Image 1 (tube, rainbow, N blue to C red):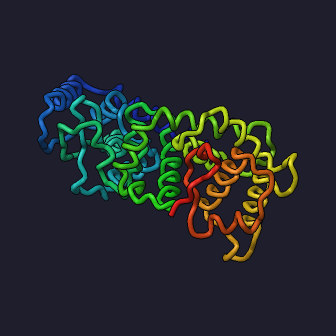
Image 2: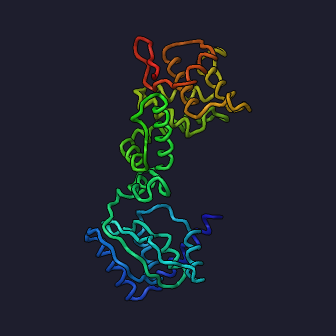
Image 3: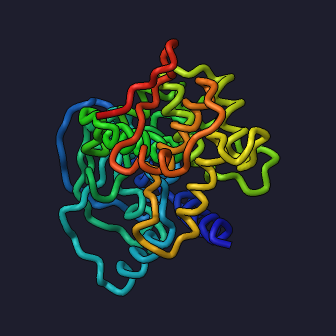
Length: 325
């Protein structure tokens, strides 16, 4: 229903753009030409409703997801004379694409009225993650804008990865801003795509997998980054997700799965585990299984993630696995 409503609103903007006069087209051409000079500068100008529609429809391929509800609210404010000029600007990248202001332009087009706006030119495309940093934009916004697929999911995974390594004592793993999140996604895009694939496969043909898909993808990412080969990750993660074991109730996978289940079903806050600790149990079980361990104690496993979580690195050849300090 929302999708249909959004499409209906977009069609209204498209219709407004189709009403453009030669003067409207000249205005749009002037703005785009100025943007393409690459000079960082600003101006104030009056934009007609039709010109706003053209900018929204034809020059808006490198921006955040559009909120049709916000454009409609701006339309309402303009029509009841509650629209106020403020410090919010219309921004253009050096490529001539719209960097910021699509919701306001959409609202102006819908209203059928001209608005006077401030315009900033000369913005770099990779500057998206620094606009409203730590507030309205997400790190994945900028990543998505440069063509990275599943950017929002990858953002979730890199944040879980950073939280895990930080808990494991790797202070440099912290992501302090959306810009750092964006960089982490871009620099690891191939590995993230693989982790998303492996995590999704681990849930195949399992009615109630132990881990949610995003958690499984985060585990896959931690392991692949830790030196595990994808075939081992695929096999063992899928086995863990079943929540059953052919090796008895003390097998690493079965114990870890039951601890996760008990944590989620407990009504006592002290028995609840964070997502990071749950991932730690899974990684510990993977490592013990890879080392050939057949049986483990439930309390030992729970204690192993009580204060720290294990390094996600592949177990060393001598069977010893370092624990994070």
